[in-house]
Image (cartoon, rainbow, N blue to C red; front, top):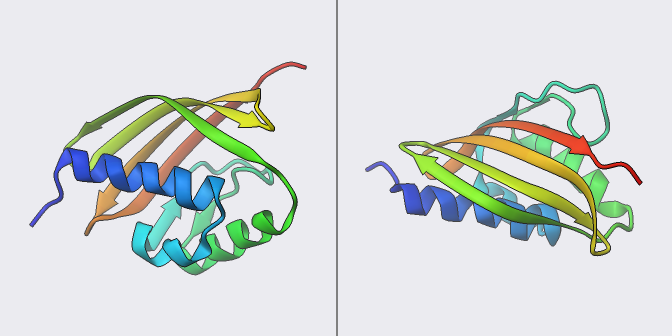
Length: 123
């Protein structure tokens, strides 16, 4: 049975809160689909092309080894069918560092596709 829009939004919020903010690697298998793909395609350390849950675990696991306190302040979350979009602000140590939009597609109750775009704010 397909997930409701509200259930899909909850999965996306869990991704942002438990994994990206808190670094809970044990939540990966519950939130990301085994065929997860990050389509951002940027050649940068913060948004590389990622194919598969194992590559995602490697990328984010390495990132969580570095000391960095940041948070995604979700300003808007919109869902329809199997898709969820968030608009927000990245905060590092409480200071805004970037505006972001992320578009997610879910399958089997997990994030399978992720398109991410961030504009860094000037100092």
